[in-house]
Image (cartoon, rainbow, N blue to C red; front, side, top):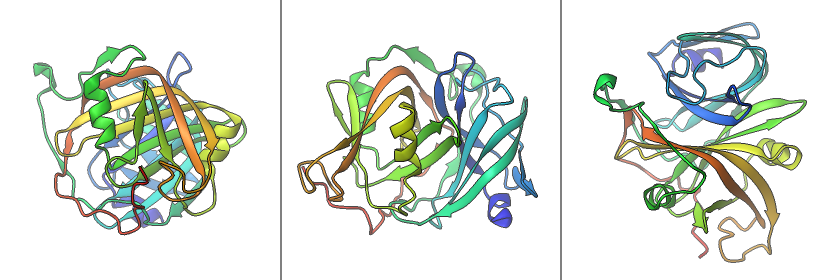
Length: 267
């Protein structure tokens, strides 16, 4: 697992901002920016202003996910943030585990360099809790998003969610998606059942559009096979956005091979 971490150049972290709101943010670096020794993970990157997790406070739970879309592999590391400096995070891990490759769309991502001084990527506009029409379009065409959750005893967690475009629905400003069969660990669902604070991150890898949401989530049970129950599990998650940030990601990857495990959309 340590070798896999050291070969990655992309990660996603879940933590709370200075106001206590939960967010999930993307971190990018050169290969080797993640390296572990024993139970300690060093991340040679940190959220930059104006990302909502800029200036992360140490001493709080943090969840990290690193993923390689090209080979459909992912690893999660959850623990305590023991150090936070510009360009450097230190995590004392108490959980580290891989997940199955299901629902990961295969794509090769390339970094896109920009001059931040020109108002380009990374300069986000703060919106209120109401999703704009553009935000809803980005969500509805997504085949991938990232979910941040937390638990009062087990800490924060970052997870990947994927499916065919349209698997994430938006109705009256509320976002929901069916829960597909996975590794039966139920990390995210178990967290949401105890603490409804949640965060979503959407990236349009073709255009570079980025959307970060902080809000509240709830688990719903429906009749298996009902409209929208794509995977037939009878479970879905409904998310109510409370804070919205839009921006641009410095990653592109237009070509995609959809996972053969993606369920057919059920209405």
